[in-house]
Length: 215
Ligand code: DX5
Ligand code: ZN
Image (cartoon, rainbow, N blue to C red; front, side, top):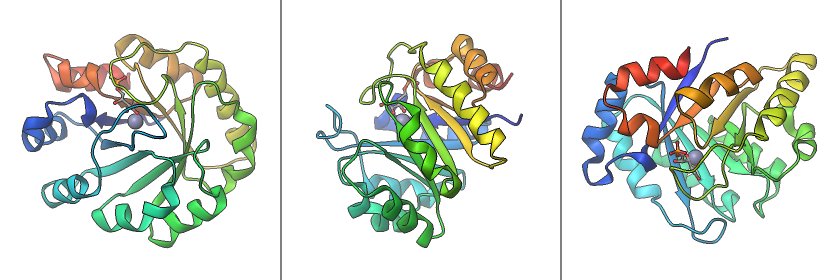
């Protein structure tokens, strides 16, 4: 399986964002993962639309936006116009799921749906046929640098079986606590898109760290 690496800039030196993105791009990251937090859906506030629009001006890499906000539907247009390529929102948010997926697609963007560690897989199965990606959170959303929650491995393999049984082409992304040890576990369970923040941005040799995540 082809593995994509999405570098979470929440783990970067944000005072030096342009250089951090160029560094991670030239080291071979496939995507930039952009964590948006509103202080309501999660207990933290990160960055948003104007920062995304600034990044878009100097990078050509795929912009993978992860919305940890209570009302994603309201902001899809703005994130799409600011340059998002993939927009992932949470099943636990208050927006209508079908309407939000359709809104993302209406701007020609890929749609992802995410579940938190304690949310069972069952609820999202009925949306799989219209999704481009499912994001299985492997930590409680809100902060970088947390430890990987091992029980998410069962969820990843169950989702992989459903996707393969249905013959669908839906990416499985994982986010939280991904490093050279946990990467092989999630790949083995069937994830093909790995988000990594603190591990990648703190690595001494970034290109090597990326290849460790891939194989
Ligand atoms: C957490 C964010 C993650 C975070 C991952 O809520 O969604 O993307 O930046 O950071 P690490 O890789 O350090 O766990
Ligand atoms: Zn994220």
